[in-house]
Image (cartoon, rainbow, N blue to C red; front, side, top):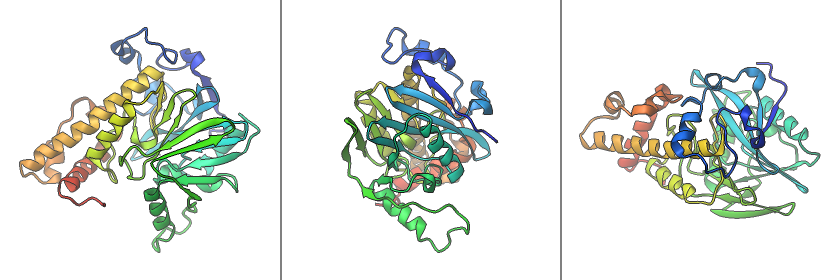
Length: 330
């Protein structure tokens, strides 16, 4: 698309965003925030943005940025979000972009924010749209992943049927547990596994100073719950845990960035959507319908208008059926 420049935005200048409000602003109730929010889709064009607006760089807390870029997928256009944390001793990035060209654009954007090198890359999601460009990160950067994601990346790298010319798979240098605390430049950064959700190896990144929680693909803002490798009922429990945390800014892995209150409302809506899919699929399973029949019969109300509904709805129903049948990986 020929996008070269980035657009840096701070929540201190939220008139540039679709929904207005400052972090910690509780003067408006949830309904007012919902009315102020943009349309219920991850399509940036529906929100009034153009190619010239991307990539967008939004300062969500001091020295903490969300990097949002356009991402075509499934015959639609959505956006993919990475997290950037600047410190005096290096830069942490959570999730790259889909290919080396786009991840290099992310790297170049970071170079415009700081002279510090990228020292840590968190593999929050092991899916290709977040890891396909990891070879563009600087040599010497540490790549941190959950054991489940590390195994998935290893299997991908050694797959004899891997397409010729596919981007190189960068394997993790560090395996992290369920609660790992990094100290970088005097700043605490928590890498958390709150439970299996979208991939099984899902990590979220919590920055206590600023109360930012980057949720990667555990939070797909206004995207129909994508479950091809998910653990559906465990995903609901994981989202409940995230909503219990002390967070001012929930940052999704996909979706148009809006105000903190709108992002939190979107997370609640997404949690409810995942639960709704689980409950409806469970009902049809109990009635003896096959997965394909259930996908035809199921109606999910407002979330039927969310991005990627056509491609993801049948997969989601099938995945819940697999969970109910005890067929998911252990």
